Length: 242
Image (cartoon, rainbow, N blue to C red; front, side):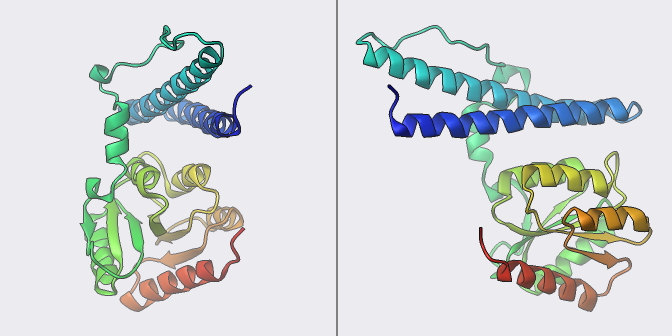
């Protein structure tokens, strides 16, 4: 029989693998719904998720098979059970993926600040830079993403460190509501505040119903921005942990 730690690892890895495959299906659907969009962005995301799924499946197969062979007294050398994508094809290997899980991969404004990490997602450089300046002056550590794809990449690598995301509604290829949906798929408890000057009220209402933490109308002042950030973070800190 397998030991308890092995069974626990198998259960965790299987759950992560299933979640990854669900993400693959969502990205494929997004690609189909955006025939005029630059598909290379979607293809890259799909490739990364498929690479992770294949690697997880390989690790699962290796560990289970090695344990079975060890219990039976046989050597553990075996033929891999899954074909792995080649890193030479442009996909990150395991070591590259693990080393990338570090905030040094992304440009951080005020990296030594005492406050939380804030991810600002806005394709207008002037607005993004202004917001980051305001937040950094207040002590927050700030990362800027110029579109939804970059925001998802940052959040997948640093999600546990990011205290709040300020998300513009109108973004290239993927609007804010689609980005919010993908962020929720990564972490259902993700803290997101929407920022826009023209967002449709029905869409804002739908996002609020799905867990959006607030809304900052543009153009916003320093006082409005910082007040919304403080309120959201304080409310999150007061929520009981599950």
